Image (cartoon, rainbow, N blue to C red):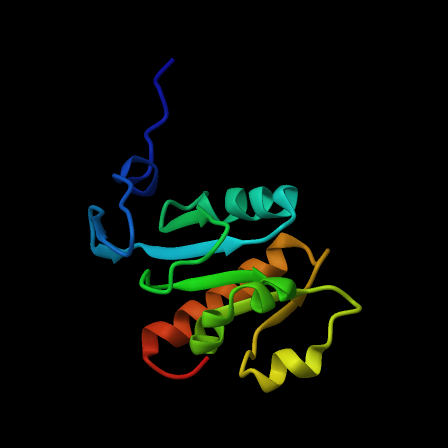
Length: 140
């Protein structure tokens, strides 16, 4: 029985930190996402969902590196623990709990807020929108 051919996406080399990878038809820029969530199960689930296409370099981090380009996903409490994040509100997706003060998050300039417990697929949709906005060079 013949083996099934793998697609170009499955065989493409994996790149790191916003570098480019070549596929058969084009060069694609790999997007970096830093996940700084306190819930390790949700963070790992999210990493698995986002990493499946090999076009994203996912990092589970305690403190995001603002020098690394790309999207940063952080808990609402993480904003208080790491104030430099307020310098990059256009790159942030904040995961809030129902009892978090959303007005403080909004006043800080953050426009992408999800709730803890939202399906990872919802987070993936928000990330895609933010990546497209960042690629276009405009505010998210």
